[in-house]
Amino acid sequence: MSIRHAGDHSSFLDGLVAFLQYSLIHIFLAALFFMGLLPFGFPINVGLFLIGMYFWSMYRPTILPFPLVLFYGILADSLYVNSIGFYTLIFLSIVGFIRWQRLRLANQIFIVHWGLFFILLILIALMKFLVAYLFMGTSLNFIQAVQEVFIAGLVFPFVNMLLFYQNRLISSS
Image (cartoon, rainbow, N blue to C red; front, side, top):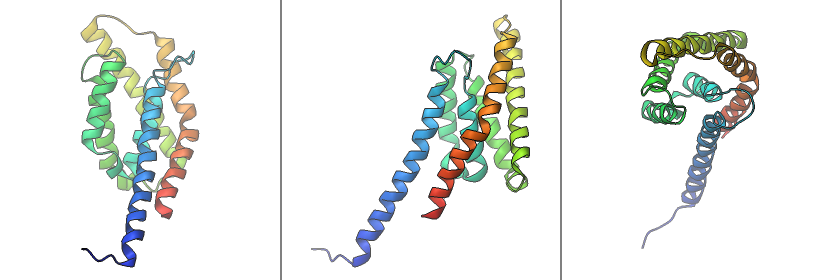
């Protein structure tokens, strides 16, 4: 027979609340990932997921460990029909770079983050063109690539705001 202390129930409930909060974050990240597959009539691809990956790598890197980033990269490579390893390399590089520069970037104003995100999107688009040309012998639709960059870049403030409120929800408990 075990003796229960009054704190046992509250610690269990605290753990349950924390689990639900972190689960909400990962469900939202997965939703951002799979939204790129929906036929919206305009290209999104992985741009929405990149916003979440950028945010959590910056502010709470433990939420998005490298094995999970690797899993999302392999999943993106298989679902978005790119050369195997393309998105895996992109995702791991972005997360690694942001974690490396995290202390310098964390205290910057929002416009710096937005600009850096646009630069990352442009670099990814250029890498897509390069990979398509060198390894597949084809060229990509330039207009579609520009649309992907601008749509993800313009949606960045709104998705970032939702992620910010998720972060505050975790911090407040």
